[in-house]
Image 1: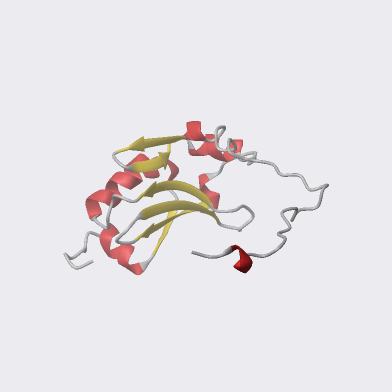
Image 2: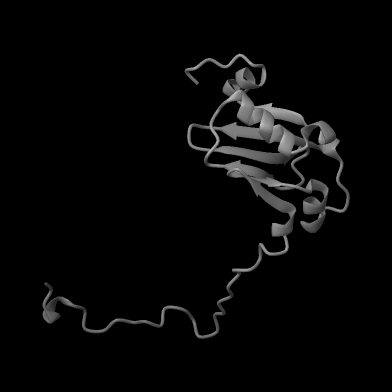
Length: 139
């Protein structure tokens, strides 16, 4: 146990300037939460044009976006990337339960309505094997 003599004599608790303002943004996701759903441990965007419109994009053209899928042994993530990099990446799917399997990726693509949007998929080489059905038991 520390004795009082080891403690500093004075501690300045007024670290911020007196004119500094602190704002809490704890509710900033409420307007976007309606565009997401959860099924079986997978959180995904259920209305991509609506989400992009709510984020300030005036018009959605699926030909201007690519779908990036990243998978590891711990999680699976889906992100939309703009081709011209004019807009930030938009996360549209996430799961910490799903692993790298063909059935999982197939279900993820169905939930994202991949056939409707017809994005170009950008994936790592390991995911290419899964998408082509060439997955072994050692991935």
